[in-house]
Image 1 (tube, rainbow, N blue to C red):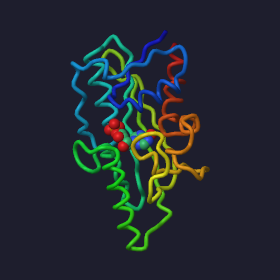
Image 2 (image 1 turned 135 degrees about the vertical axis):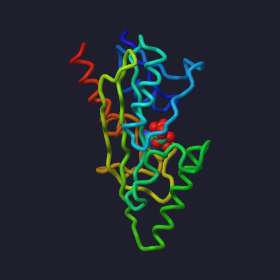
Image 3 (image 1 turned 90 degrees about the vertical axis):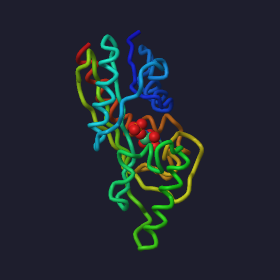
Length: 201
Ligand code: IMP
């Protein structure tokens, strides 16, 4: 079994990556290393934060193959917000529900000015693969879609229940995980990671 350590404490991300990689891989994450503090996300781009997360963990555990995931939602009518601060849009320590509430409120305010719906946006994901404290590669994925003003569905995490991917009429909170994992920002970045791993086997 090949081993991959994901530089995240977000079990939803780990589960999606584990399921997309399939058999042949043992996937662990930061929850297995409580002694390692998570990297501070001080970058102002997904790429910068993905690098910070990957190198921080790879320096601490140089013998392991590390993959980071920095991701988030960009909404055009909000100038790209919440963007890199997607996880803490409603403030440090905010829950996913708090962040969705803040997003719905921000969209309602845009409606008053006559903008949208539909509100267009995208999920972005940047992944960095690292080993021995060095970056091996950087991989980006995105999925375009529209934002809902009310949650739809209970599945997924984060902003899933407010996001309808292009080509579908239901949100990621309703669509089966196999559908999300076939077209998501994370799936698209991970497909490139897989290709890289295969060509460097
Ligand atoms: P990060 O852990 O700093 O990369 O923050 C990612 C945040 O973006 C998450 O906490 C979610 O709010 C949001 N996000 C990223 N990917 C997804 C997804 O696949 N579905 C829903 N929300 C996501």
